[in-house]
Length: 139
Image (cartoon, rainbow, N blue to C red):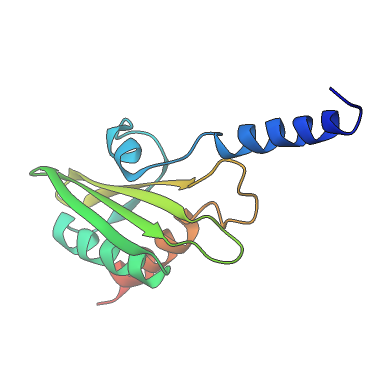
């Protein structure tokens, strides 16, 4: 091996490691424990908060990939932000869970498609929570 091929080998190895680093997938988000993520409680009925959550997700610039009703009191929504010039894309899972007749917990888990994607927004929880808050506060 010549001295010129060693740096190329190191660069190639570094690129291979970067490309093989952990990638988030929609399937992986679906299998994460439902209690993982940033949580906020809202006053209101389950159906109303769920409607507000769906609107908040799309309002945050995310496209809904799937909406699963886990049981009578829990729904899971997986959304994604596509690739751009600055990002490999992002995935967001939102779990809406009725706590009582007038209290609902919303839990947001945001993941970058690639862990090394430092230009991705990263956390959509505040944007989603703010929109839900405004929607459930309206008469």
